[in-house]
Amino acid sequence: MQKFTIHESECGQRIDRYISKYFRHLSFGKIQKMLREKDIKVNGRKVSGDYRLEAGDEISVFLYEKAEPVAKDATTGTFMLKAKQIVYEDEDILIYNKAANQLAQSAQRDGEDITAGLVNYLRHKGEYDPEKQKTFSPAFINRLDANTQGLMFGVKNYLSARTYSALAGEGKIKKYYTALLCGVAPEKKTHKAYHLKDTKTKTAWIGSHPRPGAKAISTTVMDVASNRDFHLCKILLDTGKFHQIRAHMAYLNAPVVGDGKYGNAAINEIVRRRHNVAHQLLIADELVFALGDEIKRIKIEVPEKFMEVFTERQ
Image (cartoon, rainbow, N blue to C red; front, side, top):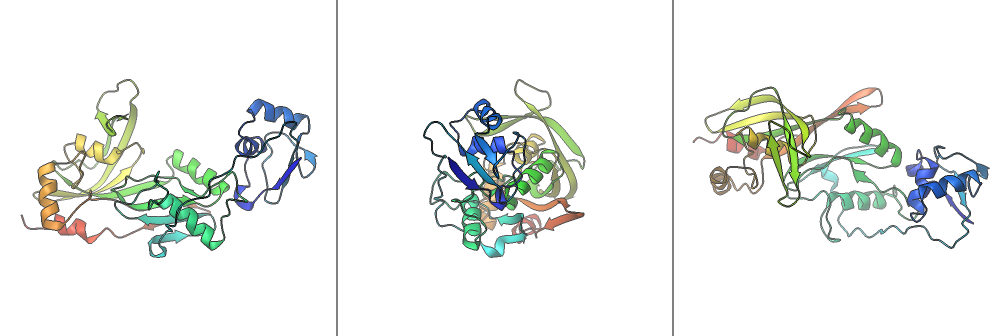
């Protein structure tokens, strides 16, 4: 018999799904049978598979074979989120201003990735203990390219992860970007196209007509300020596909300045030499979402480098 208690950050999960993450060798059908036969109980009582766990619930699991729960690797290096870059935080979520050239998640244990930084930050605060919270790890529900800076939406517990991941999936977390573009000024409207990720080249194909595997995308250009060479644009990301803004703007002949994959190499080199720009001038600078009964708007300043390049006399 094994017993364990549900931590407050893990509550809200279905008991059957919780057990499937805790004992990964058990099939889902086996778990359902164990629930029916009372080999899995909550607070000493039989429950159905859709029972939602509450903080403090004690789960008892009787296994006929010897089995250990899957061990969670708690090693996340030493990097911790920088307090000055935390834009908003409450007991459920954390909004972080990621720097350009900083990874959202790294395969290297000593890499400076912000997912590990979030885990270490919450461990330091005493809000997360991997020994007690075996089926949930704090994470960010949106992703930014390594060279794109801006706002990342972090969740601290299972309930907030479920709530805000669902809102994001429904398009109810509005993600606004500021981009400095070159080439042709994009029209202020919603631009629709088709998107397909090439896993070999790690690039995105954009086209006006579908092809096998391609998905429809939508990118709204909200505002455009132009001079002779550049366009400073406010963009709403309606769908969130791989490299969407960068590839879609390049498809519209308006690539992001500094973009090494989709951009204009000549312009990029000029901007690099004149302004020491080593990454694409694209920032996720605003998030709008429901927080309780209010609409929360999180906004950060666009770096001066954008205006420096935009306003330079050519």
